[in-house]
Image (cartoon, rainbow, N blue to C red; front, side, top):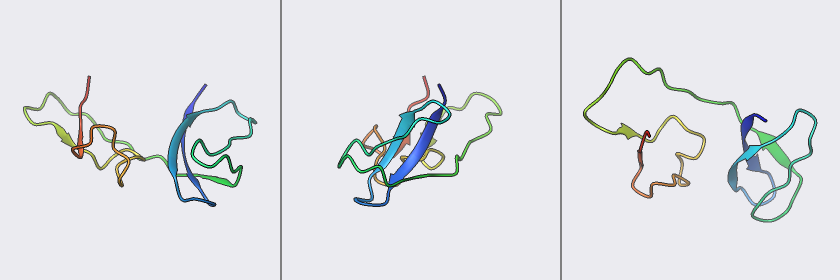
Length: 75
């Protein structure tokens, strides 16, 4: 199943959900099915880095970063 980024049109929550091709999705925050799929962003990896990546390439970067520090931990 592919991972897609969505924004809820009812409450504005950002979510990343594993969904089948024609599966209906609902917001994990409010339960609404008024969800809009977001364009995926990606980052090219050119080699190892001594510094952690700044969290700007994922759909959850705007206030929803799971690291809580605005830094993606690549593992």
